[in-house]
Length: 285
Length: 175
Image (cartoon, rainbow over all chains, first blue to last red; front, side, top):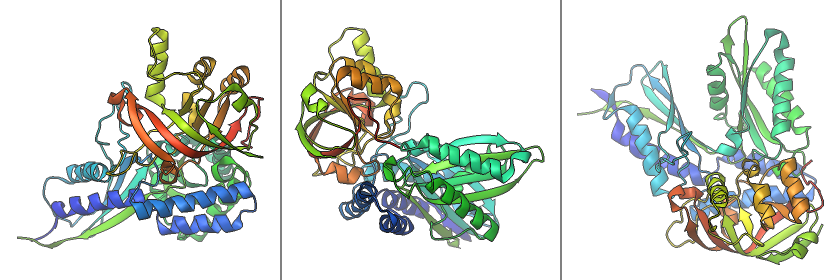
């Protein structure tokens, strides 16, 4: 029988969670280096130097890049032909996150919304599931910080507002967020779907590497246009002025109701910590 | 724009010489408090209880650090976003706090409290928690250990790097 062993999933996902906290993805490092080269103001350069030094130090010393090691967010793509062997996928991912946060000395930031009592383990992990064709399991993990999440917004535009309305909302949101979400940011945008789907689209968009353009050239052009308008705000690194307010804009679209134009802006700080791992079915006993 | 080396507790004279954009390298003791700890501090004041640290001349650092790995005084320890403490900060400034350290904009009420009380708001680089932790020599929990990362700590720092975001004259560094 072919199957995926969830014990192996738990170990590798735990390792991924630990690695993500201390290693900034290389596309983000390159984007920060490019921003450093493009900036002309001393303060903006100084901030970007600090961020580059910070990621070097974090990697070398095994220290978390940021004290906000985030909520553990997973996007799972489960092949419909997969057979899973073990204790359940949700429990496996949740335990992998708990183990990773404990073993790597990461901060536990998950708490009750009203009593504010910390759960003490960073559990529960937030898990989005998609069933896809095939026999592979893809687990994408993001450590999502609260400061940038607080600057995120969702709205229901009218169809008449169209692309101009989307641009106006996104640019105004980033202007109002100003220095708060730790710019330079990455702006995830979900367009379409429904009231609940748009934010998930926006969050998933944040996984696309900064040096990878959108496969649809028309959407890639819209991303470039929005990035230009956001950077024209001049907010700059840490809000202290400069050319780089955002490192990238990532759009994810879906069809929507004829009455609606759902829009979500999920702001990601420069410490964009995410990784993916893929598992294939193997012969088991 | 100048660079100042200051040692805690801060005085009114320390604060009055600072202008927005000045760099301040802080040495001495920072008291950490973020959302839940601020709520506890204000509740203690409402009940006329003694606070876990002296407010006079104090510098409050808005941070919830990662746990200390073996052999280090603390884990990663950069600033959190300050506006969430705006509801509490004016009262603490009124009782002698001379500086807070965080990131992001403050409310008009906080900026007025800085002018009224001759105090400052300092910004540290958000997302540089590993780098900033190198300036922290010692850290110990002094109150509310049950709050975990939000417990109140006394941190001994040397040359902790900040920028003056709001000074005692109504100045604002953010564009």
